[in-house]
Image (cartoon, rainbow, N blue to C red; front, side, top):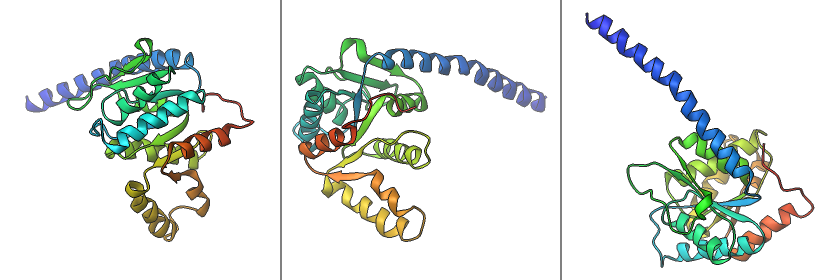
Length: 228
């Protein structure tokens, strides 16, 4: 009897997994339709826990404002902290402000600076990550936690393996990122786990002017389009 109950439960899981495909497909379709209509954007990542008044919150706001004034929209994860700062900067510049929200048990709630028609909700991290990668002309990575590192290294991996076109990946904040950057150079590179030219995939800066210059220089003479 126990064995039969066990198999019954396993079969129910398999059935639920099959039906989940339609929900996943729905998130992809909705995301593609909305994001494809928005135009060129730059994504800003960073900690949801960074408060207004923190130097990195203020810097993220200024960076987003400058990027918006340069003609790009801003995409964030839609929540508080650095995400809010990014959308706030876009809002201050009168630019496009997109929020890709994720349903989480803590931290996440929509910030008030997202354009009303550009707030998208996701249940699946992997669907949301596809939207960031496909529709971003660059990643600006502020100090953050595991989620920020996840987005950073996924983008590096996809570019390194030629799964997507190269775009600027900019780490902002030498005091925060320098230890990681040095470890990549002195440990990963020295052990032969990456190639020397892989280091060119990321750039480390401290100012909004440097961020805008890197993005503008990269796209000078290039066509702006989705990455795959």
